[in-house]
Image 1 (tube, rainbow, N blue to C red):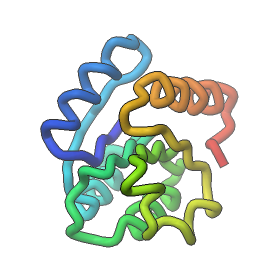
Image 2 (image 1 turned 90 degrees about the vertical axis):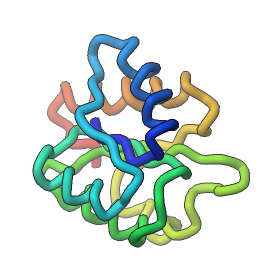
Image 3 (image 1 turned 45 degrees about the horizontal axis):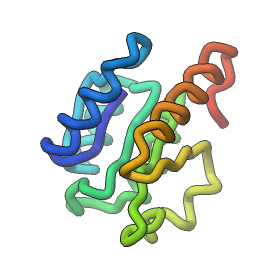
Length: 127
């Protein structure tokens, strides 16, 4: 899984995610532009987008690029009341599978990861 979050937030997420032996964070970056470059090389099953990511590029382009990979990366969008669901992504959220989880709800994050894992296990690319 690829995390797009600040170093501090990625450390918290990594610790929480690694408690489950079925999930591993393979890379993280706060930069959407670098995240897309990493995704093209690493082909992550899941990418987690956090509101803390740096605004060096358009999150909609990141989302579209992740979903265009073969196989497409599933996306978990972490939200805050202030950030909502990333206003920049409103137009593209219907284009592919996206799972949302409140930023402070680690159970919702794990549930999204489990849902994605079950779909991938059944050969459903999470469309």
